[in-house]
Image 1 (cartoon, one colour):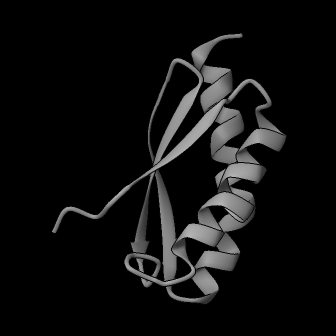
Image 2: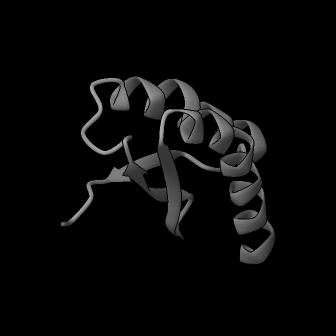
Image 3: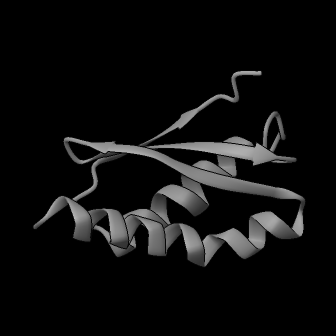
Length: 81
């Protein structure tokens, strides 16, 4: 599979969950994909939210793996501000 099509599948997964994050004033950004691992960064109200870990594991990671089963890990990068 090409890296472009994998990136597209991951972006589609993020688009599918983005409305839930936006509803609470947050968002998510794809940082990079390397060796079947995805790095994302939460933005807005999602940064530092107590539900961040649950959102990451139950929402983001599961959704990405549904869209792109070849992904093995989803890693959250903390906001650097």
